[in-house]
Image (cartoon, rainbow, N blue to C red; front, side):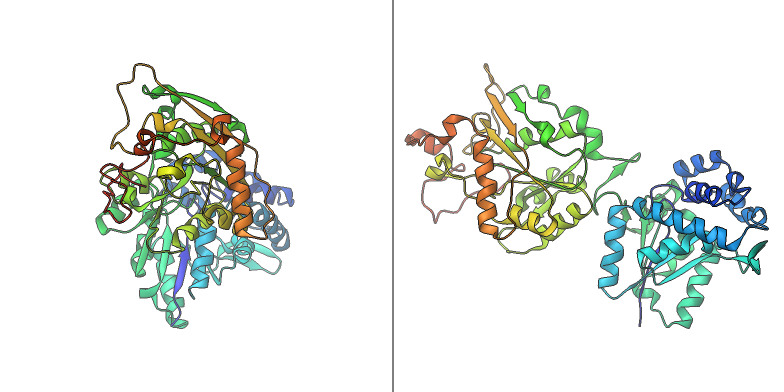
Length: 472
C-alpha cells in the first residue's frame, strides 16, 4: 500500500503566511479588489507570531465572498507568479525532506486551508502528488463567491485526507504528517508518524505530551529553537575572544568566510582548545555552523546533549560509515556552513611537528558532492593552553599565550581526485600558519610527551583513556 508524507504550507514549509504574496500578485494581475483581501495586514502579522487562530481562519473563510466576479484566468496567472516567488521561500530542510520521502516511496502531498487555485502551481513545482485545499466554486470563467465543498480547516482537513486515503488504498499508519498548528492535531493523529513543525504553543504542548518529534525546517533535525532562535544564536554574544581569560587571540581574515550560503570550513588540529579558536572565529559571521566531531564528545554527558542540540554531526571513525558525511552534505545542500578538521585527530609524537599536514578525504568529498567553497583556517598556539597530555586546559595563566588564527580565501580545487584535492586543502592550511610551522624541528622528549594522551607510555598497543579531554 502507498504511504503519504503530508505537509502543511504556512509556517511549516514556509516560515510565514503565503497570503501576502498571493495578495500582491493578484493585484499585479489586475484583480480589482485584491489589495483588501483575503485579510488585513494586521491579521497576517498576528498569524506570523502565533499561528492559526479562529479570527484569521474566519477571515480566510469569508475571503471567497470577496472573490465573487474574479476572473479565473487572472487568478491562475497570479498564482503562477506567486509560485515562482514562494518556491524560493520553502525552507531548506523541508525541500530535502520532500525528496527523502519521495525516494523512500512515500507520496508527498500538500494539505492547506488556502484555496486550491492559489497553491496548485506551487504544489506542482514541489512535485506534490496531491493537494488537499479549499475549493472555490466558479460560474464559467469567474468565481461565484461560494465554496465548492467544505472549508478545509481542522477536522475537515482530516476528513478529506481519510476519504482520499480509503479511495486510493493508502496506509495512513505508515504515513507522515507535518504541521505547525494545534488545529491540525486531528490530521496529525490520523497518521502513524506525526511531526510538529515550528509548532504554536498549544501544539508544542500536545507534541510533548504525546512524544511527537518537534522540528524546524530551517535547521537540521534535532536542533532546538527557543523563541524562534537556535542555541548558537543565543550563545553568540558570549562567543567572543575577550571571554577567554587563559589566552589572547589574533584573528585575521574572517571576512573570507561567506556570510550566507553553503561553505566548508577546514582547520588544522593541534589541541582540544582548537574548538574555542574556531568558535570565536566563526562567531564573527553571525551565522551558525555545523561541526563534525568525534563520537566521544557526543556521548559525553551535558556536552554531548548540547552538541546535538546545536546541530553537531557525530562521527564514529571505527565504523567507517558514510552517514556523517551524508548529514553534512544535507546541511550544505540546505545552504549551511559545515566545519571540520580534515586530520581527524590531533597528531601525536613526531607527527605533531611535521611541516606537511596530512588529511583525510572528508572535506574533499563534501566539496566534490556539493561544490561548496572550502575555506581554510590555520590555527597556531592552542596547544600552549591545552596540551594533549592534560585533561583540562590551563586556567591559572600569568601571561596568557597568543593564539593566531588566519582565514584564507577559498581553496582552488580541481574536482578530479579526492587525494589531490585533499592535498590542496592541507597545503592551503599550511600556507596560513606562521613561518615557524614550516621549519623542520626535532622535538625534545619533553615536547613529545606533551603530544600524547594522559597515561600514554609510547606503546602503540597500550589501551588509551578515550574519555572527552583525553584523546581525539
